[in-house]
Image 1 (tube, rainbow, N blue to C red):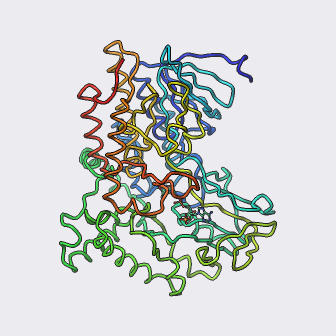
Image 2 (cartoon, protein in one colour; image 1 turned 30 degrees about the horizontal axis):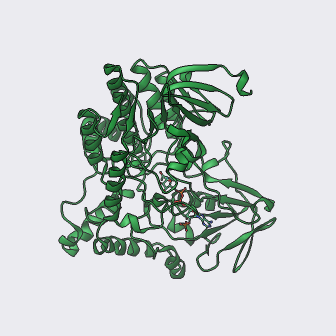
Length: 536
Ligand code: N01
């Protein structure tokens, strides 16, 4: 369809994306009486959980916490089967939410939003899709996700490879059978580390191409029985309260002393307890672990002992132990049997630090040290995170300025929620907010509720638009930078800083002050009559 043949619709709000944040945005704004139109590039709801179908994909936040809190009936009715839910179970949950709250009728699937253009005279936006639709809207709510734009590095000759190539974030819906195949996995982030044990269990031979070693902690996953589920459901009010008041959006409290104030024995016991509980919160055992290198070293040494203990070959263990960043400074990985996988006869670790990839050819992958014949290549190479999906969407604000140009030196927001020159445009759970450092379900609810309340505030006053003041943006950018500078996270070459994508400016993008502190700040701004925003 070309543009002249499209039907031009008019709505109050367009929501881009039907993942966790997008679904709740459609629900909340509709309940507030707005006409809402959602667009989603996938054929169904789920966002990141729709696309990332690789073997072993599961969440690293406990299921009971990684779920919506807005509906008491929903959280009481839904039964999670495991401590950490698998991708199919989370997708089923999100499909259930879409059906239960009758959201699908507001969402057009298989339609990717390509642009949003502001009309400065009316302060309305025109949103266009790759299916030729053109919609006029007062508000644009982008829920495209901080980890949604898959990164495929420009490997020389990748197109020439005669076998199959799959990216973990674009996995075929029918799954892949690696039985009898020689497989190469490139990448040892969360996606690689989760999928490698399962691929190893199937493939004839697995080569893991590792450029940088990562820290991973056993998940301690387990099925949930009826009694545990009932106890969790009964404790929801307290669990949620603790989560809202926490640094990361889950009911975790750090040890009540700093790591270096605890005795060696006390420290070891605290690490052991967290280790047994399993998962990513190991990096928050002590409150100073991510700000003080000496404190971090105590956690790192505990981790190294544990990991060396399960890898048979000490030379392989040495390669798997990071030597370039503090533990937790990159997103710590949660695994099931990852390090033990290297004890299998059919698994070989390829050290790309020693001999980088030269390129691919029809038969496989060549490194500076040799050639690996393969039937399949799995790219577990991550995402152009935080800003990648927004960059693909042409957002044109005041004076014809694109958001991409405005953010050329790094994203600049006020509270993560406002951008000067882009009135009534909200980017959810992105740069300038705790984003990926928090439980994304509660974070999505926090952002959507804030946006919906701001819309109600405008309507109560007969105002047409809300727009961040440039001074407020500059102050928030400063605030975010200062907070990042006091953290060890700022020193690692992670996707939090865009360091994984050549050419990206090195800026720590999430707000590092903690989830509850952030919630207090944005709530206070709203209660003060949207200080730092122009309401007109
Ligand atoms: O991506 P990553 P991911 N040549 O960027 C390597 C969330 N998540 O998809 O470190 C060779 O972490 C790269 O190497 P290096 C979670 O927040 C959550 O795994 O750049 N290698 C790295 O090893 C996570 O942090 C869950 O040297 C190349 C890997 O590819 C985030 O998503 C599950 C390369 C990419 O790791 C991203 O995780 C999955 C090249 N040219 C994801 N380019 C859970 O809930 C990249 N690499 C548990």
